[in-house]
Image 1 (tube, rainbow, N blue to C red):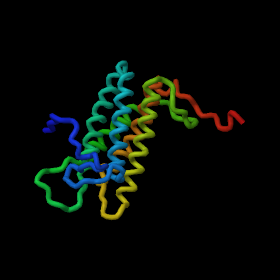
Image 2 (spheres, helix red, strand yellow):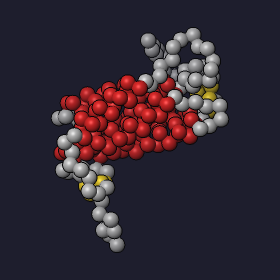
Image 3 (cartoon, rainbow, N blue to C red):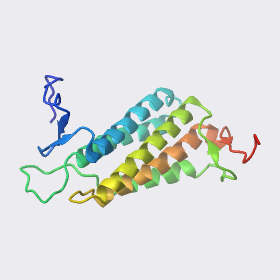
Length: 192
């Protein structure tokens, strides 16, 4: 159980932050940047949810994803470096990826096939979901870079989850745009 009584600790005043497993890292460390981008994705989804009230099933999916993103942040903030910990670290599991895939399929089932790329926008909900999608893609790029770094690890389910998340957010944005009917299509070379 998390208990936060005091918000500021002054321990980060030197430009470092503590990982869950204890070691301190610089605040511009790649691992910190990766879980920071996951947190930014979560915040953007929180803003999107301000507009999802008329789509309660989608709103419930987004709320589950927000919780998953805290799990993902905890996973990234507790690197598996072979050290024996006194607790079981929280990890993303394949079941979370499977649920996300099922929700993508559910939302995508009634969407018209795409005939063009689409421009981010349409409804307020869709626009915010597109923004969350692009932030999640940044988080994914950082996680992949981290996974390929010397002496660093990122668990495969975490990488799968963040990859699937951007797909979910794309399909959810189309779903929020009146089932794709309000999508704004890209017209190649339109302004030449």
